[in-house]
Image 1 (spheres, rainbow, N blue to C red):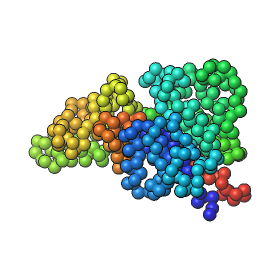
Image 2: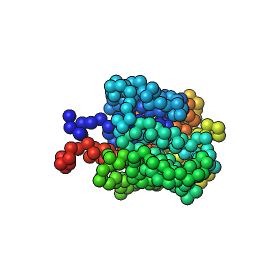
Image 3: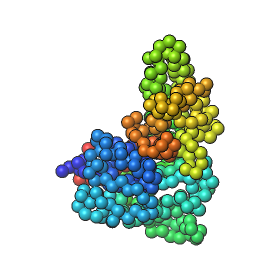
Image 4: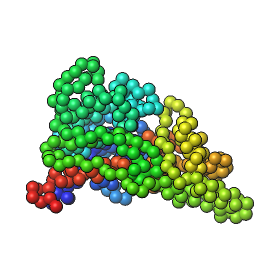
Amino acid sequence: MGASDHTLTSIEICAGAGGQAIGLHQAGFRHLALVEIDKHAARTLQHNIDRRAGWGFEQKYCDIIHDDVKQFIPETSLKKAIDHLGGPLQAGKLDLLAGGVPCPPFSHAGKQLGKDDERDLFPTMLDLVDAIEPKAVMIENVRGLKDDKFQEYRDWVVARLEGGRAKDPVDGTEKDYKGAGYKVCGWEVLEASDFGVPQLRPRAILVAIKKEVLGDQEFQWPEPQRKIRTVRDALNTTMTARYQPFLDQGGETKLRAEAALERWRGKSAGIAPTLVGGSKKHGGADLGPSRAKAAWRGLGVDALGVANSYEEGEKKKSHDRDLFRPDGPMLTVTQAAIIQGFPAEWEFDGGKTAQYRQVGNAFPPPVAKAVGDAIARILRAAEQPEGDAA
């Protein structure tokens, strides 16, 4: 078996509805576990992995773990994965530990409590790094984490991985950390629209690789694509399909549908604002605060809610609400997911609001793929016997 035949394995915490999992899978990683606390998101993962072609490895070996990540213990939580591993997961054998740890502690939309926020799961992630000793680590969060006010916190994360002096985020005392043997390759802000996502969605991403794996290689962050994908590029097929039943009726209904569709097409040649998932405690599904709603209006979309599917619209008689508003049509959950970079066939569990929140809180798969490709290149090259590199 050659080095290129090696299966790159990964475990992902805070997996959500699968945005990062999809992208890393496309980059060649095969998941041994996806850990997610939200029941609807966990069901979304299970539903799609059970049914999607190309996910045979995960169907056989991946544990979808619906639990608090603080309760995840690699030695005992992995069940199906044991068949692939030949026993419990041993330290140093996993290729990648990844996670989109919750963003509210650092989000500009929240109170930015950082380490003082009970949802801060960086310590849990770093404890798992110590326990698993993966060859590579990928952590995703919001751009707000890169604000100056969190510099000491970022220094502490780097010290935990790489070694060095930093302030303990709990008691504020300076300490010398021995590190976990990693080289932090950067903590970069990547803009989703640079990677084929029709949305302004900057994400802060940390990549760290074991020093003995990295060797004298240099990690290369993915380069932005030249071509920007617009909302019209992404949604024209599905938007046309939504209006098609009304176009087929002929007469005044057809003329009305044609006019509405053309108005949308005329306005949609731009990039969407950031989709937000919102909180379980506050409100239903809409496309964001006032500024975002205004931006959506400029793209020919009414952002005051999320549309029903055609079938649900028939039952609820909501077509006027969903498709023929003065500011334009509302988006369906599927269309919001496409704006986030999900494959159109990815299905979400739960009611409309629960589905939309999964979409709005997701990591865009194309960005995960781009970073995953860069990590995979390092890991593959490290497997090459000396002198065999192309």
